[in-house]
Image (cartoon, rainbow, N blue to C red; front, side):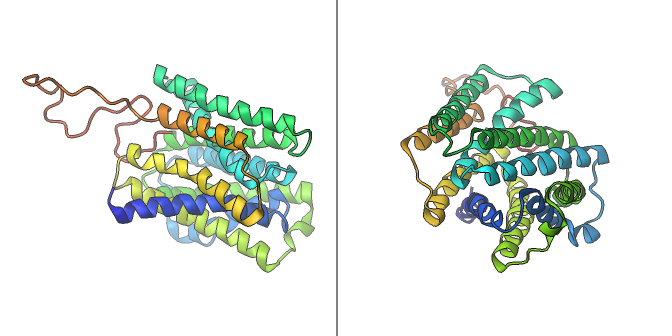
Length: 316
């Protein structure tokens, strides 16, 4: 990856990592479902008026909106409002990659290699370590809040499978339409459960948090991510997403004073190492001198388990 593109990938991870602190700030001014509804409403309009159609079957737009938009962000913000700190949330949500693999196996018939199973087991070990730490804190972090964030990771995983089935040719346009179908049910849920008064708060800090999440994190983030995926193989781009919890934990410590405990560091190391191991292919031994290459005319090696052959398609 070229240096300027590498810097762009790292900057995107920083934007997505800091977004957890921004969401925690926004939740001081808006209830969680209202916050989620406003996020997708602003991400969709007025962009949806000029974006054109999604160019994929509508059932996959609706399925992705229900899982990624309503389930993931609804549960995520409910969990954070219930007491999950921003930095720890940015780490827990990364197990979406494990749920993605499990759902892809169950719903798409994809095969799990022994390497991926081992990596997923290590990642789940890190999640179990966090769960044990939350349980041991005797209410400092409600266990229900932790489970809501795990549910959000599962929703993200299901949304990834729906996105894979949709195979959108334009990721930004697809995200605009996903936001458009996510906003109405979230808005209805917020009005029913949180009341209409939840939409009347217009503090500078609250509005700024919603704008950051809608434009920088959602539209800007997916535009940059899609742009990188058109220039590099997904196996090159995807590992940079593992920097998101690094920036999430660091920004939470810097801006909110969230402590970084040894348990968090150990659990984070297990989760990130497991995901990295599961989603990278092992190095192959170099061919002996005089031995012909098995693919002499193919400049790209065959895809690893779970990776599609199309250049630029995510492999989570």
